[in-house]
Image (tube, rainbow, N blue to C red; front, top):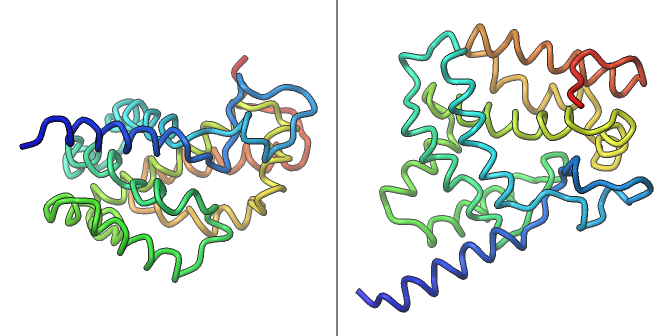
Length: 207
């Protein structure tokens, strides 16, 4: 093993994660008047992936199917699930095509070991409850980022990337319906999204 090469490859990978800017906006980075798509206020891929273990560890005890969902496999899936974006960049769900997904999978196949790629495809195919939980937490990270924003900023972000409430439900509801408790939490989240879009008084607000 060439230690220098391993370290250089690691540094390049982590640096690539830092460079990818996502469509989400970070609350403590946003300043009044900033454009929603200004890279200075947007979340990078390190921040997104770094948030996921917090969500997974917190939410796992609350799901109704805790015993059938592997915490270890969930964390391993989420550690690698966006590695393809270090090459492709972040493509918002509302803009992503089937071909984008096919291309990303081929890129990832060349970046991971065979065992890691099997785990990656388990996440992509979502045929296990562990994979469904992982995907739900990936979605929840975006919801959390939005709910920590002031309402007017969150509404602007949703409009900028064409994430209307019903469209968001169309994209994400299926990842929560498999678990009774997650499904209930999801409905509460979407109720808050409607409040944000409609400019009504927030219920789930943390200052």
